[in-house]
Length: 556
Ligand code: MEZ
Image (cartoon, rainbow, N blue to C red; front, top):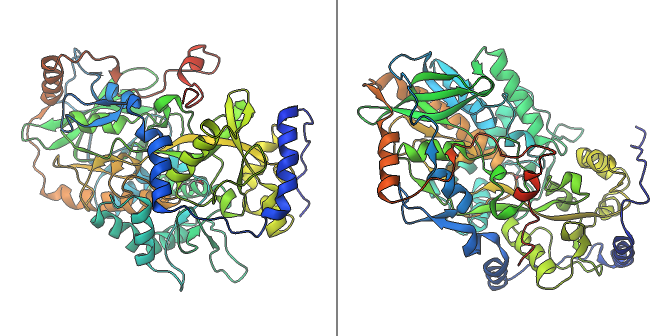
């Protein structure tokens, strides 16, 4: 195969960057093959406390109403959780549904699709509603891989311990146990459906390390693992004839007069028309919150990641767990600015690239856990002044040419072809020059609190994927999110369909929405926004974009 050709742009890096690149190149031979020291527990604790955005008091607000009253969450999320419902003041006829199903799934990403497949397998009438199109989801954006302990030198016990340590021991044990125990079968399920995992000539799956893994258990489809998984799940949903209603957002849950979840109020994203779906069980699979741009960070998330499910669940009385803990992926694109915040997969570091400062020094082991790595990058730029100046702030080199030095020519094209092409569009050949990165808002570690049967404290309300909290504790490891959407998407689908035959719905109502509003009024909370948000408030070319998305932590 001919090597991928790139027209490099001699002007893409300015003189300061080029001078720094020369230092990176000069130090590279001495860095190759040298194992970089791991931080001690005390060092990690220190860097997290001082530099991780989760520890910034000014980024958070305390909830004044609802099941988590008194707890802190990111300020932007608090505004939405305590926002004004989109159904208030509207005549919504919940007694006369437009759709009637057993299991209503809100969200068309990996968790929603997996849930739908298993719900149908369980014999339930099943319907997906999604505010964009099926597959427009963070699953699609995941690049580096999916974890599963399925090699002879590994075991779910090692996987459990790695994720528990990475999560700072806050992971809910029963959820984590399910995640790791069902991981090998999840890989086989996906493989059987047609996911094209990277394999050796003899068919053995290729596995690599991720940050915080003690064994090589990252299964990948080059650097578009999520897109490949989503392709196959979407095909499966469509081929099975599962009803999918695109461009339709859920804007409120419906409960019955006994407090059971009984469906959702829907809004057509194009026409604004309101519809009602009656269901005996509802699965929230709405994904993450990157488009809320917590603390002004750019994001690697898809356009619709606005925490909608958390808002719907919370107003209906479902508890949140660890909603104050957010994952900033250490390596988001910092330059060129047209790609600001886009994901540079952790696989780049798994393949050997080091994190290097303006003076060409590799300042840390590149495979520390994500929270520690992100905080260390911020420290290097903000406290030590060792970042590389870019138009939007300072950044750190990811020394990608090392990958080819270590793995041989062609490794980048083979292992991370998507990344190579992404940079090529801007005249950067990452095989020849390092790339500039800075943390980007990537994942919501917490979410709605669920049991190991994926149900919340609201009967009939299930949650799967990124909208659920607990399995990852307070920091998720790479590759455990794709795994989570498969294991817990399927879990929610199975348990929701099994739950349906025992349900007798009472009178449907939206009285919980009025009660919540009354609580807000009593607490003198003035709602700043209508919620759920559904889509971010910026558009390309809109000057407000510049106000919303500032370079993270410029003021630290
Ligand atoms: O699990 C993830 O978040 C993931 C695979 C991201 C990546 O770096 O590729």
